[in-house]
Image: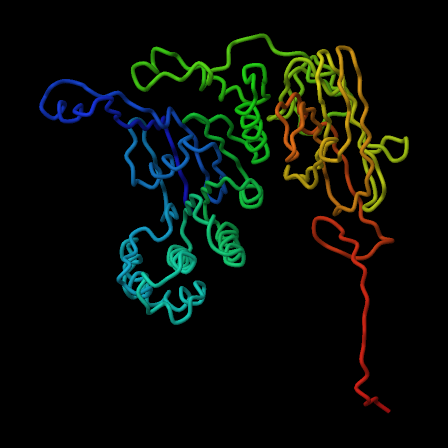
Length: 476
């Protein structure tokens, strides 16, 4: 069984501000470089059989971390312990030679990962079948399409189940059917006990494959927890990065990200170029309450001594955020006028969101999400997307929005997330996000025994018709 231990890993590259700096150092002319730190003080363990999704913005250090774990890049500080056989899909097809046939490249790749010729012989039939490129297996790689090369490379890399599988955006290409085959193979490996490290910008894939989420932000670990926590904080950081006043938007659970951006400047000066002032949120008092009345989500953390029914201030589920001037005061799930915590699938219910404004906003909008037990959005919309104009609000204004719908979703446990944004744009986006409360309400959907039998995420309510043509021959 594969395990990984990462201890105080840091990785820096030399950066030469002047054209002849490297030559001057070689000639003994002193230090002419500065260090650009990509990773800083990363420490975590991955237990045998765990599936860990690693997410973060471009340039956060995700790929560098995987290269350090794989041993293709040496860390500047710290050390890594890897137990078990590793299969790394960092760049599919790397090392393939365009003048060799697919079969020859398969043998060469097998030898590079330490397999004997006899082992590749035994795997070759399965490699051909999974790749599905037919007679091209004996043609030079230069005549392959990019999709065919990816098929062969993935098939070769996963011909034998590894103890540790490391995947870095390697499945972002190829047709949808082949991607499904790849995911099925990865899931089969995980079910058999393979440890998985998976880097992806596809949040749906992280939800699907991983039981733990690691958010890397500015070279540090911002969140290490459930995938939904890491993804929610990632999305909130993306909102803050687009915000015209990023310093005013505070994010629950992102303390490590803030510490990353407010690191000691003297250390930065000696190791890398200073972070621009616009990237560093100024220290300020917490904004007004990110209010939510009623029952809290079951996995929300409420500090000791605080009434769970009172409006919290930036605590609760990771990834919630708020700015001064707008707050969610209640989120209710109603069957008619009656609050409910459980409902029958395909029944008509309403989500009612109440908001309070302490500042003037030109074009505010209110929306909600329904999320499944893993945290993956099942449905989301807002007043702007529905063509509803809330209208300008002034300080002390309160707004109630009722979203009524038929809950044609599968039986299970769900949560409701609510938010407020300002200044809608043509593509359904907003110029300014104000507040989001994660897990404002939880509820359970029960099976509708009066309806049709169906499986999946939502009931499409198909209309079925059958036509028959007689063959003219009937049994006596």
